[in-house]
Amino acid sequence: MFWEVPYLILRRLRAQRERLEEEEEEKEDDNHYESPPRQKRAVKNNINTRRQFLRRRRRRRIFPARINLSEIDERDIQERYRLSSDFIMSLYELIKKDLISTTKRSNAVPGMVKLLCALHYFTSGSLQSTVAEAGGITQSTFSRALSEVISAVLKLQDQFITFPKNTGGQKLNMAGFRCIDGFPNVLGVLGCTHIAISPPSEMEQMYRNNKHYHSINVQLVCAPDMRILDVVSQFPGSTHNANLLKQSKIHERFENGEFNDWLLGDEGYGVKPWLLTPFDKPVTKAEIQYNISHSSTYSVLERTVEVLKSRFRCLDNPNGVLLYNPEKVCKIILVCCIIHNIAIMKCLDVDIALDLRPPIKDESIEDDTEEGTVQRDKVVAEFFPV
Image (cartoon, rainbow, N blue to C red; front, side, top):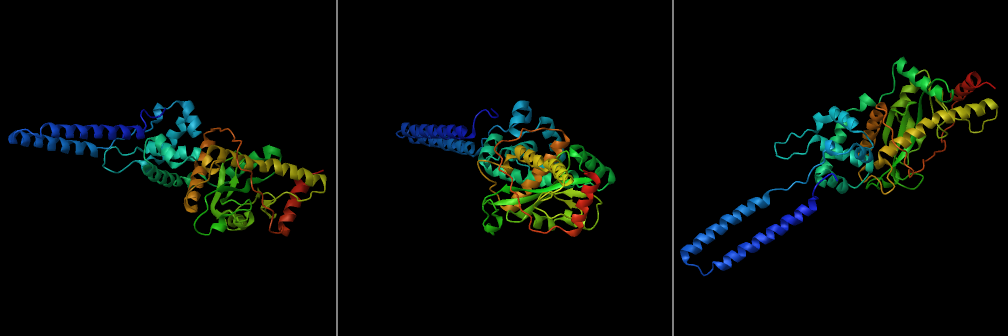
């Protein structure tokens, strides 16, 4: 157990004690009703003094025991947060200046308690009231703490989610992808995943995807070690993957020739000089081998999504969906991606959940470009000879 006495029990005990004290006061009034006038005045003064004392005591708040990381067993930390205590401490050091309360009131919520409650929500997807009770704070306090943690972690985005600009980082990614199944010059794998949300009050139909539930369509570019190199998380579920790509910065950067190599995408995209997709109907042995290698390499994206959603069950909760407005959901997705990258860098594993929603596959709505077809044929001829 993470707390000694639940808050609700404390509140009931306090109410019961106050009732008993009021009954005692009434008995004292009855006993002294027939007393002489001077004695009656003294008794009345004593009763008034006692009542003032009791009022002061009633105004005193009783706080439940708050969660303390040092008092939790490491196994329980792994179960609850799907992270290690060392990792949580390292993350806290990065954001603690934004979580320390500046209020001068006593019993302010410590920054570590805010972080632990937020992580518990991210990794469990439980209701706010459940997470708040486990952390020893009220639901309204948890709501404010969650916003603080989200804002603090988002400041780390440029530090932990970056597409490699230098040749050293690009060569490292290409070498990692080539080790999977021999596919050459791959800078990253590109794809989308859907995060279920409650129906928003505005433009509700825009968020309904082709599987008929409401969601945010999230575009990811992943490295061979499952780090997320680029993320776009502000588009509604009805947005087609290809249309989402056209409106992203990564599309603009590749179209402007910032990179000389390419990404891999699935059949939901048209082939481009910098985005290689599988053959719809491979004919030759070389094209078949190309498709096999492409599929093996592209599976990195699928594993990344599985790890991300298995660690942060708020993104894929079989018992519910994210109950916030789309803007806040987008921020939560980004925060989970940032913490995911830090966890990958710290080599923290997580068991893949068996109840994840099946992925949504889009069919291509755009034609292959002539330059893309030429580039793909060139790759087949050079690297996948018969």
